Length: 370
Image 1 (cartoon, rainbow, N blue to C red):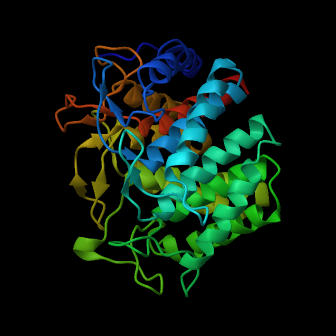
Image 2 (cartoon, helix red, strand yellow):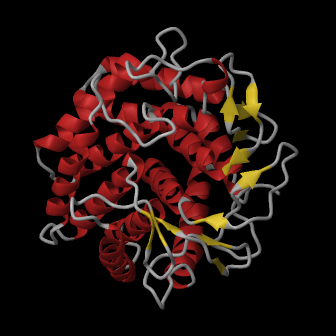
């Protein structure tokens, strides 16, 4: 299906209409469990929610989406959705130490009480978005307590230890960087700028391969990259880190970080299929294709990075690629995976993708109206 736009400003208008007219209303209504108060984990192409255990990351991401929608002026009604979502999230998932468990049932009973740093990062991001709406709402206290609880997960060689099976990984740090930058943007204390600086410098010194400029995923306890079968290159993460490192580099006036961001963007482009105009899921160490399927979320990161670091033509191609996922039977839902032949897989849309879509759409709007 051809994209319904031919220029970036047209793309921005199309995506904004999809977001405000379809996605936000649908996920605020059908996407919320009115009986138990939690957000649904997934939704079928027909707009009917799918009953699954509720991950903490999905709850936090949806709070972020609706709080951000309110802050961006898309409607005050989204504030109510965000506030109610956070109250229930905090009630169900928060432990006495201020950290959040991994998973609960739809009714709000604990299912998996382990703690992932990845989930904590999204709780912090949701709190930052809420703090932007209401600085007196107590979200800064919640965030400071959560950050304090994370200190027990410090790694001896720097950074943090994630839960098994990959305790030394880049991905959880990427989202901690994102949430630290968000807190710095909304007036958080110096600890947030310090955390952002620490993670960005860890990326520059350890996560990014000095020989190729590519972001590696998994490491040993000294932050030496795992290679071979255990190593992989994810184009979506190349783009996601590129966008974050460019943002941090500009804020700190750090030419090295901005150069690294350009290198990461170039690495991500190695994973873009020129026929489908989508980023594939994974590459091998030699940049040959490891997984030719293409999930939705790498396309949002491709678009963000192309808008920040690429040409107008590259950004438009990324916008066209992402649009392929937004044509299920019910407007406002999305497809999650594209097959190698370009067809979609008929499966539920994960709620977690809404966060990716929201940030990419806002970046597109800002860059075309800027």
